[in-house]
Each structure stands twice: as structure tokens, then as C-alpha cells.
Amino acid sequence: MKWRSLEESGPDTDTRSLREIFAERKTLIAKYVPAETLAIHAQAVAELKTQSLAANILPAGAKAPPFELPDHDGKIVSSIGLLTKSRLVICFIRGRWCPFCVGQMEGMNLILPQIEQAGATFVAISPQTVKQSFFMHDQHKLRFPLLSDAGNKVARQFRLTYRVPAPQEAVYRRAFVNLPFTNGDDSWELPIPATYILDRDGAVLYASANEDYTERPEPADIVSGIRQS
Image 1 (tube, rainbow, N blue to C red):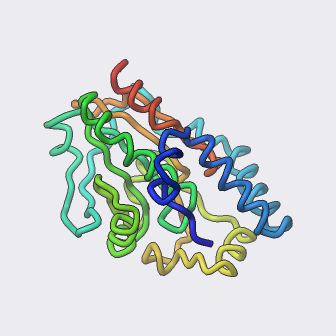
Image 2 (cartoon, rainbow, N blue to C red):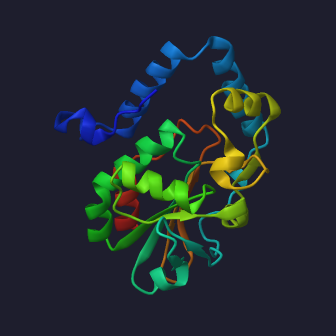
């Protein structure tokens, strides 16, 4: 299934909320994906929620760990270097294979000028390889760095990681979502989607995460969070 980008959808849809875009994608998924497969994904999300993973992430008020990661071109990006210039917004995503990650990144791409005007820099972090990040950056015409977190080392410091449950792994394998190839390791580990706003000293001003990968903060709310922090 080819997921339309916001630009492909036409200018009349550019102002839609992320919630509306995701609702459309959920409808398409429900139409084409077997019910038993949907049930396996729902069960995986429910199990993560019982672990209260989102409630135990690195919280607002904490100090974010510094990191250095390669971007989509292989250039090393330092969080300390970024924070010397402005506040920093970070989105942790699963990868280019996830239609909800794609939708979120396209939404953040559209609102990037407002993020910068509010006095912040934006980056996204995923466990996918640099090559996969390059493909995603190029395909969706993204204007911000996509950083590759090999082995989820940074995501683990933010307390976001989990191992994909075996039934869901089997579904992904059948759907050709080859995480060992995409991420460059055999761990089958992913981060739950999360968004952070860091102050220039690295303090966490805002932290949001959800075990349900189909739920993400609205880009406009992130801009408001920067302005209000």
C-alpha cells in the first residue's frame, strides 16, 4: 500500500489535523488488513499499556542525556551543539515503514517554519539505518535531520524501548517489515513514539509518549508548547 504524502493529497488537506489524517489511514488499514492481524496489533498495544511504559519515560523536569548520532547523510549531529543555538524538539519514531510515523513527519515538516520562529530546532530519531533514513528523508522531502539511533541506545536512555512481541513480529515478517534489515540488528526492538522539548541546558520542558503508535501529539500543539515553555 502506498501512503499518500500530504503534498500528494493536495493543498486543501494541508491544514487537516494529524488526528484527521490518522483517522483516514486507520480506515484504509481496516479496509485492507485482515481482522485477525488488526487484533494482534491491538493486543501488542494493550500489553505495552499494562507495562505503563509511557508513564515511566524520561519526564519533564529531568535532564536529557546528551547524544551524538548520524543524520540521513551520515553527518554526526550533537545535541549539545544544537542546544547551543536554540531549544530542541525531538520526535522518536519507529521508522519509514510505519504509516503513522510518515504522517507525523510530514505534519512536522509543514510546521517546521513555525517551530523555528518559536525558537527551536527539530530532529527526529529512529533505530533505522542511515540508508533507510536517507530514503525516508528523500522520499518525503523532509527539511529536518533524521537521526539514526543504532541499537536504540539513545531511546533506551529516554526509557522508550520495548521488544516487539512474537505474534506481532510474525505479522511484520509476513508483511515484509524486516526490522533486522531496516535497523541493522536482530533485536526486534523499537521505541514507543515520543516527543520532547528540551531547554538549552538540556532540561526536559515537555515529554509526551504513547504506547499506541497510532496516537501522536498535534504539530500545532508542539509549537504552542515551545512558545509557552
